[in-house]
Length: 235
Image (cartoon, one colour):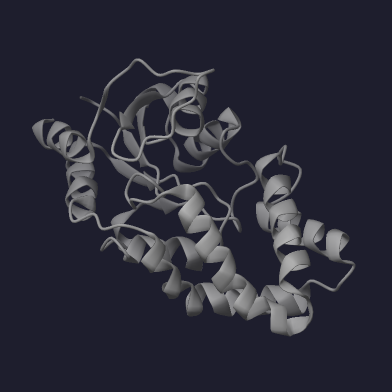
């Protein structure tokens, strides 16, 4: 294997989780923090979902963070700034409570270390729906941090989201590599495998918490997280 960069997905790959379980639990915790600012939980969650959808469909016209909060303000009719300030505090602090909705992965650090040994750059290609503090919090749950990556996606820095292939081509441009020189490691057939392949990257499907897609089935290299780590250690 001779890649200039290895990209890792976070949710479901480095950090084991069931997406629905995590999202429901995380939203409950977020509502505890943001509702007292001046909105009932139901319209709050509706606004968060709307903002998330706007980020997922972002065509590059703005940063995901700006797209999210502009949508939040439009849906609620409220000034978003007090809510954004509260959210910033949440991702640094109370977000830690959402760890209970995820699993353990004692091999996460080893896999990332192995990736550094067989490539020039290692990228945390988490879907940029969270601020950097939120990404770092979740990385910390599996023993990883900022120093373990050459670049970490967040909603403050990105203008595309998965499953848009431009998410990957944009990352390649930012990190100075060509798509064909990269390996994307993820658990989602559509967001990680198909989108990365459409961008011209290579891909490896981690099957432990795989999210399958009937429309875009992946028939390339695949295996458990442990098998993927052994693959990296051999190269």
